[in-house]
Amino acid sequence: MSQLCLLSGIAKTKRRRFLGAASVKPWSFIISIMFESYYPKKFCREFVQIKGSGQLVNIMATVKEIKPAMDDWVRVDRYDEYRRICKRYGLIVRTDTVFRMSKKKNILKNVIGGKRLTTTYAFGLPFNGSSKDGLVHVFIAKSKGNLENCFRDGWYPLIIKHRVIDRPGIDIFKFGYNLGYPKCCVGFFRQFNNWYKYSYLYEAFKNTKKNRYHYLSNPCTRDITYSYIYHMPCAYNCKATIELARKIKKAIYAEEPEFVEKIDRHLKLPLLIFYEIKFYAFDGEIKNGKLHYKDVYFIGQMSENNLYESDLKRGNCVFLEDRDVVILNNGKLIRRIRWQRRNFAPEIPFIVQFN
Ligand SMILES: [Zn+2]
Figure 1: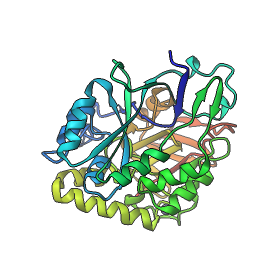
Figure 2: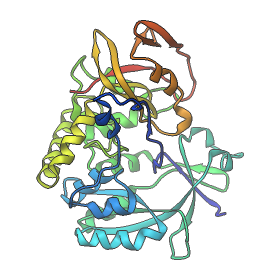
Figure 3: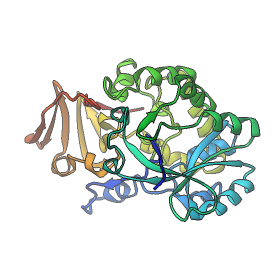
Figure 4: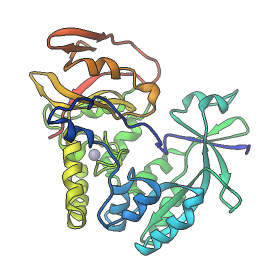
């Protein structure tokens, strides 16, 4: 395998475990179609056919030039087709490296700085036509200038000869700007994206006035099709984020109005959040601080984080007591998930609904 090894928090291939929805009650039909892949009638449909709908909104926003540029991952054997589709939509493409995803245990042995790395690991190989498998990392944009800016700053931490080489802070800022993210959010991300100290989603929650959680500033469904934003907002009512999302929503509505309806519905589901990659969405409502529900979906990342599926399925009410998560069924205790201090990826559970 290559001596070059890339590591990052990207390429979220994953999950989407559907919980519940087993009954034949009238609402179960509606529930069973939540979080499915979405196929547009026409606009950008070709992208979904070759790589699923995970980044669909991002691609649509780039085609509409609301986003200046984006990066993406495409199976090596689908790359030629991907490039042809991009051309059809007036997008230019620049390729980076091939990622071969790997488990952490295959990579982190005696690596200096390895403890700082987080969730996603891959071996990196040059993209030169000889690669037969893996995902090629690409950048796409309508303008050459935007494409070059994004390419220049868009790289991830990598290991070369047993040492982690991290990006300079300025590249992280610039990459965020080049992707069209609001300045306030890029700054907040730099400050709080520290898995040794913070739960980022909780910090954004703390940075939002109570009950001002705006659905256009909800980042939790951003990797599973149904979101207008792909960045982590500084607050759940960030004005710049809402403005950006509103523009994207309007542009998509002009092409695919049904898609917009579906995105809005997903964004307004109540959520139980443990930390950045472990959270659940519910078909339910919050009353007096308690979430009453009929169904639940794990929408975090990696199945090993889905620890509470069976208990939540057995319940119909969940709430926080101190930092413990309490699950009830018709008032009867199903489980109390005791809060535990963790030195890495701290969990501070909270319940939130965006409106
Ligand atoms: Zn912001």
